[in-house]
Length: 633
Ligand SMILES: Cc1cc2nc3c(=O)[nH]c(=O)nc-3n(C[C@H](O)[C@H](O)[C@H](O)COP(=O)(O)OP(=O)(O)OC[C@H]3O[C@@H](n4cnc5c(N)ncnc54)[C@H](O)[C@@H]3O)c2cc1C
Image (tube, rainbow, N blue to C red; front, side):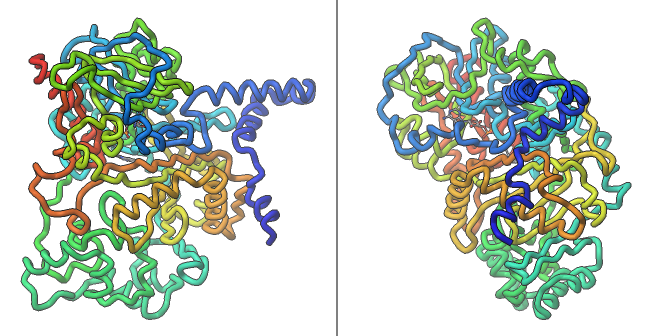
């Protein structure tokens, strides 16, 4: 097929945003089309499309760290502002606290600050995006007059570690009762239609395209019997997924654990379990916590996660942290938490305080986020380029904060500053930090992540196949799952197959074989350089192949797309393969997060853990450090 025909069949020529609108309008004005001039209809289209575009959660296309939001990051990184820059606009504004970064850490820092010192405190939050929340972002699709929600980043309250007392208190203060999660979870769709997991084997890695339904549901010999893999790979995969012998005989348990700590899961499979390399593609896209892959996950971590192959080794059963009840999922993920916080910080913009029952449908008045009369102001589209004490760090009474907005360098002053942004950027924002601290901050390399949400006008193809999710080890997005949304906060999740639905797809770009940090860097680069059209083509092609033979028509059935790219995704975490084994107090994130004069450091990087509770904990610590140093606690 020529490229031109392929593009047409996939729908690359379709203007999704405009088509959404057209369908919406068609429902609303129906017969008016006949009576009104084309020009009038087009004018109405344009103004409604513009109205949708004015509301950040409704902007679709390339989202997450979209290009304009990070347009100044390259210059900051190159050291352009190592000398304090010339200021175009001196706002003459002074604040008790300036927070750099409006993610969950920055927002919760403002909340803790107000709680400690009262509502008359003046706080400014600066963020480079057009929406608040950091990774906790909301995607809204409007189709045929109905709004469909999904999460552009942080998905849920959930963690492998216990929530701290402070983080729990904050969740409770916001009115979230995590014990109610099961009452909002929308399982009806999967149960009613008996939908389950599946695996798509692609021809580039497995010789042919084939979807095999029943991953983990069918007995493994039956499942792999249907997979397009070599006889040897099939035998090995069935063996590994069954009861395994001890692949490390002759070693004590301690010796085994010491060895597993220092080898990758891939090495364990190939060298100890003697798996045929033919079977390795099946493990692509699989790995350990924090998006480590089969080649970068320490084998011991894989064993502790319950990965296949280890059950004959006689390893001690780990005391797993299972606080199952500490889980809660809103249809827009933890963007709901960001909205709940903002309703408490800037009530004029988001009247409330919002709770679980009201957060879903609340509409943000973005123009009211930054009103001079408010105690807390949130200034979006503002990239901080430089932070410096006004004088020596140990005696200054103010900190200068220079930020770019509308192409001009602005300045505000704060009695205190919290950097709730990214650890690796902080040495560029404050080159006067001590050398050791700067090096420690620069140590981490965030994990690149891609959360793509695709709105389908119907999901009959999934129903026909009996699948709720498709794992595609070798495809651009290794996972695609129906996201019916939860029914909470005034939002009604999807329950019937004739309703449109969001498919949530995930990719963590990497380059197998390289050290983990290098893989992260290359993955970041991939996400920064791909255009929306590149992503769109990969998405449409993948849908066409995964759902081939079902009548799925990518041109007509895909009606919305939000590609949330996060080159600066998860916080970096340590592991036994890639990082030196040093005492906790010598870890780079601990050395890096020390208070410097009137500046403290929050954000999940400062906790070296990529979770919401960490963002809260680090915010609380950063606020406490200022209060203690000022004698205010
Ligand atoms: C795709 C994805 C899914 C996740 N899922 C979960 C989950 O389900 N559960 C969970 O607990 N955790 C999850 N996480 C982890 C998540 O990182 C944390 O939960 C938390 O949201 C991090 O908050 P933060 O405020 O520390 O950082 P961020 O959310 O990154 O916020 C920092 C903010 O600072 C801004 N900033 C950076 N530099 C500047 C500058 N120079 N000037 C102005 N602003 C700046 C950034 O743009 C950003 O908006 C996920 C993360 C990602 C990327």
